[in-house]
Amino acid sequence: MTELVFPIATPHPRPGAFARLVRIELLKLTSTRLGYGLLAASAGLTALWTTLEASRAGQPGGPAPISTLAGQTSVITGGAWGLILAAVLGVTMSSGEFRHHTATLTYLATPARGLVLAAKMVTGLFAGAVFGLVGYAITLADGLAFTAGHGDRLVVGAATLTDWGFGHLVSAALLAAIGVVAGTLVRSQLAAVIGVFAWTIIIESLIGGLFGTARPYLPYTAATALAGAPLGSANFGPARGISGVAPLPFAAAAAYLAAIALAGALIAARTAVRRDIT
Amino acid sequence: MATIQIRGLVKRFGPVTAVDSLSFDVTPGTVTGFLGPNGAGKTTTLRILLGLVAADAGTATIGGRRYRDLPEPPHQVGAVLEAAGFHPGRTARAQLRIQALAAEADPSRIEDVLDLVGLAGAADRRIGGFSLGMRQRLGLATALLADPEVLILDEPANGLDPEGVRWLRGLLRGFAAEGGTVLVSSHLLAEVAQTVDSVVIVDRGRLVAAGPVAELTAGGAGLEDTFFQLTKEGTR
Image (cartoon, rainbow over all chains, first blue to last red; front, side, top):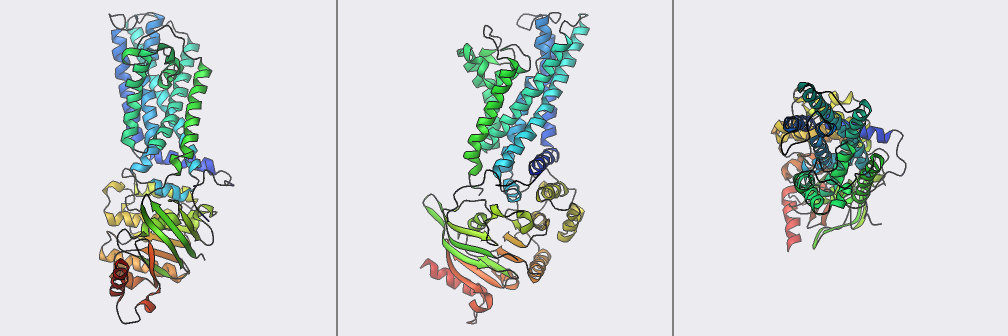
C-alpha cells in the first residue's frame, strides 16, 4: 500500500471537533504578543493616517472640506490600515506555524490538515473583524472630532455610519481569511507579509492606475469599497482618487472576497496543505 | 498495547533515497533504540510513521493503523520531534493548554506533566528564554499530556544535563515497564546502551541490524563497537 496523500478531513469528524479547533486557534492567537502588537500598530497607523487626512481636508491636494459629505466620508472611511494589517494578521496565523516549526505539533494533534486550515480561516474572520471595528472606531472618532472642532455639523446619516462600520467589520474579516490562505500557500512569513504590502500598496495601485475598469475587482480596492470608501480614495499612488468607475455593490463585493478566500483555500488544501512537514 | 510496524518503507527526496525498503517492528513493553549515522533516514522514518511526511511506498502503522487513521492520535501516541517546535513568545503553560485542548486531555494533566518534567517553576516563562534541555522537557511534557500508549522520540537526550539524561532513562524504562511502546532515536550510543532493550540500526536508509541488544552484542563487543562495525560494513 502506498501513502501518497494526506487527509483533507477525517472521514467522521468527532462532534464539536471543528469548534474545538477554532478555540485552539483563538488560544494560539491570544497567547502571544504578535496579534496584540499588530492591532496596536493598526490602531496607531489608522489614527495617524486619518488625522493627517482630516487636517488636510479642504486644502489643496487634500480631501474635500470636512464640512461636506465628501470630506467626512473620506476621513471616516479611511480605516485602510486596519484592513491591511488584518490581512497581515491572517498571514502570520498560518505562516507562523512554519516559521516556528509548530506545524509539527499542530498536525500531530490534528492530522486532518484541511480542518486545521478551515479553523484558521474562521478564527481569522473573528480576529479580522476586531481589526475592522477598532479601525472604524478610530476613524469615526477622528471624523467626529474634526467635524466638531471646525464647528461643522455631521452630514452623514446614522444609517450610513452603521453601514460603514459593518463594512469595515466584514472587509477586514474577509481580508484576514484571505491572509490565512496566502500564508498557507507561501509558508515563508517574511515573503507573505511583504507580499501583502506589495500587493495593496504597489501592485493594486499600478493595475488600478493603468486599467481603471479593473479597479472594482482588485481585492484590496473591493475591500475598501466594502468599508464605504469611494473607489480609489483608499488606494496609493496612481490609482488614488481616480473616479469614473462604480464600485461593486456591498453584497457583490463581500461575495467576491469570500469567493477569493474559498478558492484560495481549495487550492491550498489540494497543494500546500499536503506538503511534507520536514 | 500497540506494536509499531514498518514494512517496505521507501521515501525519496529528488535523487536521494532517504528510506530504502525499510522494515522492522517495535513491540510493547520494550524500549527500542533507533540508531544510525547522520542522514541514515531515522527522522524521515519517524515523520512518515507520524503522518507528517508521505511515503513513496510501504506502510508505517501503530497498532495496525496509520497515524492519520488512529481515532484519538494524542491519546495513543506521544511524540517529540523537534526541540524548536514551540512559539518563542508563548509560555510553557499556554503551550500545554493548547495541546491539552487539541488532545482533549484533562486540563489537570497540565500541572501533572509540568511537575513530572521538572518545569513547574518555569511554567509561566516564555519558551524563547528556555535552554535546549528545558525545551526537550517541555516536548516530553507535551507528549505525555494525553497519557499515550506509545512514545516516539527523536534525539530526546539532546541538550539534557546528566541529571536530565538519568531522569529520561528512568522515565522511558518506567513507561515500558507499564507495557508502553517506546521508539527512541539517538546518536548517544553510550546512553542508549543503558536504556534500550532492543535496537534497530539503519544506514543510508536501509536496515543494517535489528534485535535485542543482548543478542547483537553476544560476541562480547559493546553496543558502540557493534554499531560502528555494522555501519562501517554498510559503507564498504
